[in-house]
Image (tube, rainbow, N blue to C red; front, side, top):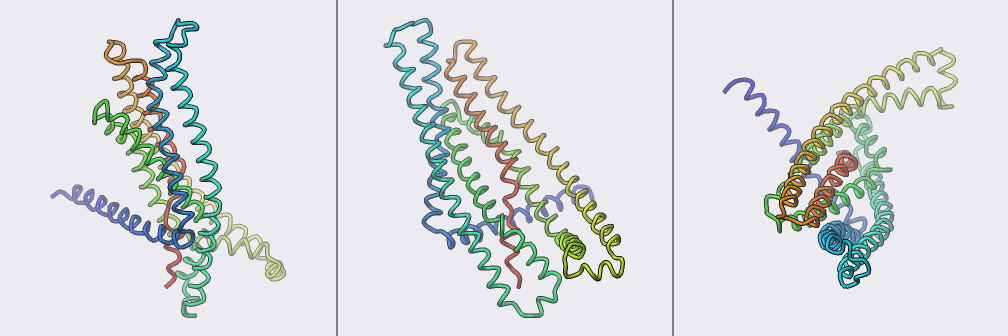
Length: 342
C-alpha cells in the first residue's frame, strides 16, 4: 500500500476514534442532567418533540391549501369552493399557535433546567476539589482542568441543554417531514436527509477541533489571565510599579492574546469555508428535488400543492442545516470531562 494511502487511512481512523470518544461522553451528560432535574427534563423533551412535529403538520397542510386556492381561483363568493381553503388555513393557523404555545412553555422549563444543571455542575466541582489529594494542587494539569470546569460551569450547562434541545426538536422535524415526502417516493426522503448531512458532518468535525483547541490553549489562557491579574489587582500593584514590570507584562499579555486570537481566526476561517461548502451541497440537492416536482407540475403530472409541499419541506431541511451550523457547534463535552480532576 502506498504511503499516501496509509496516511489517509490513519487520519480517517484517528477522526473516527475522536468522534467515538465524543459520543461516549454524551450518556454522562444526559445522566448528569437527569440527576439534576429528572421529571422536568422529561417534560421539556416531550414538549420539544411535540414542537418538532408542528413544521411537518404545516408542510402536510400546505398541499390542500394551495390546491384549494387553485380550484377556487375566480370563484368569487362561491363558499362551497372556498370552504376547503378556509378549513386548511384554519388548521395551519391552529398548528402555528400551538407551536408558539409549546415554545413558550419549553422556554420556561429550560430556564428552570439550566439553573438546576448549573448548580449540579458547581456542586460536583466543589466536591471533587475537596476530595482530591493535596498533591494535585501542585499539578498544572489539575489547574488546567479546574480552570476549564470552573470557567465553563457558568454557561456550558445552558449551552448543553439548548443544543441538545435543538438536536431533538430538529431531528423530529426532519424525520416527520421525510415521512411526508416518502409518500412521493423513498428516494425523496433520503434526499432530504442527505441535504442536511454535510452540515452535520461540519458541525461534528469542528466541535471536535474546538474541543481540542480548548484543551491545548488552556495553559495560555490561564497565563494571560495571570498577567491581567498582576496589572489590575491591588495585591500586586505596589510590586509591579516598584520593579517597573508593567510594560513587560503588558507586552507579554498582548503577544499572548494576539497569538490566541490568530489561532482562533484561522480555525474560524476553516470552519466558514466548510460551512459554505456544506450549505452549497444542501442547496443543490434541495434545488434538484424542487425542480423535479416543478417539471412534473408543468407537464400536468403534479399539482401546485405538490410544488408548495416540496418547497416547504426542503425549506425546513435548509432551516435545520442553518440551525446546525449556527447553534449545535458549541455542543461539546469539555465542561463535563473537565470534572475528572483525578
